[in-house]
Image (cartoon, rainbow over all chains, first blue to last red):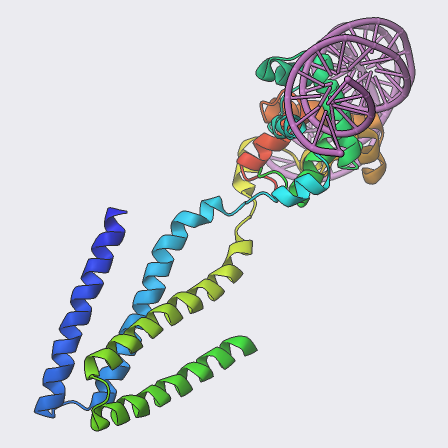
Length: 138
Length: 138
DNA sequence: TGCTTTTTGGTACTTTAGTATGAGTCCCAA
DNA sequence: TTGGGACTCATACTAAAGTACCAAAAAGCA
């Protein structure tokens, strides 16, 4: 955040300096107005690229986004989704049960429902399908 | 590619138009030169962002590659790796056996060895670990 | 050619996973 | 207040998965 403010402050200063420069250049007749404008255009073009690069680098890791609409469409409930996430982390039914403070029977029910909803034969298959549907972010 | 050429052509045209506009505006005295330059700066700033956005989107999918050196380091053999890939696709031992034209016993042996080498408790855990180690590309 | 690793396969078990079915609780909307 | 969905849990099985141990081809290598 602080860096962003600094960059924008620098930009404003640069802009003001360019104003003065262009004014001076034009009045003195050394440089044509077209060159000044072209130069400014090029400079700000690359400044835009630079700024975008910097901000994008922090958004990249967020890239694997989950398709919440698809989860809804498949009729996967909140609890079932939690189970799905833990399955994808490689936990057993017992471990998932302990994590969510419920019995293993409950987890088995959730898993069975998940397999139907994801049209998967096994939990590994469910992982692969969920990943393909961009429902989970492995 | 064609789109890129179109965009750049449009940019050049826009630049030329701006030249003429600025010239006219300045001579007629309707708009101050500062405003023209400022406008151009802002426009090209966002054009830079736009261009960068477009080009970056095509570089993103190239990201997931597999670390062959890590596979070697873990002592995973060629056949074991094939099995690992099929596990990650959600196949059962029997299905893997049929795919590779060997018996299910053989696959069980391979899977057991894989679990030891990947330090995983289950096949789902193995998938997660292999993904984290960038050994497979789910 | 002898030695090692890989790949293959088997038997015998134990442990997880997954299915089917039924049922109780809670909450929310009609 | 009643019906439906979500969550919970249990029993009883069946089906995979995984372990342990052994052993023999096949492939690679020195």
